Image (cartoon, rainbow, N blue to C red; front, top):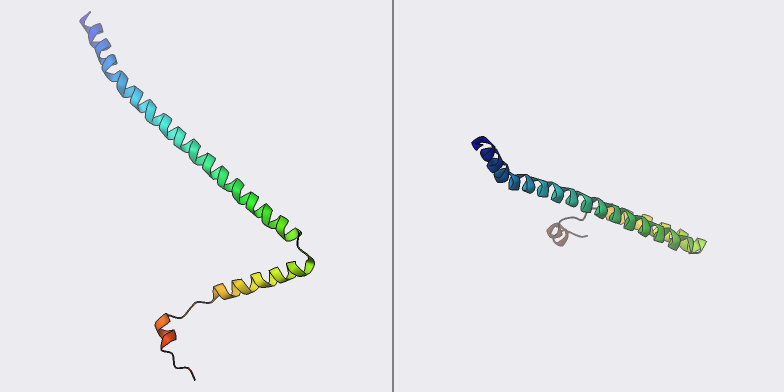
Length: 95
């Protein structure tokens, strides 16, 4: 009889520990589910943005598309150039 009381007492004492472990597992699952939903939403937003850009390009005339392409190339060229440190630019001897 005493042994069964001890076992019941131990089970009752350990029960909250099992519940807390289960709650932590649920929280991790929920966090993972929220993260997946966020990633999916971001991918969908990016896809919608790219489709909008394609639609915008298709609605332009041929000359405008050509000019847009040229401007894009120029902007990429300018962004590749590295600026010289501002003090060197200020004190550079210009002929």
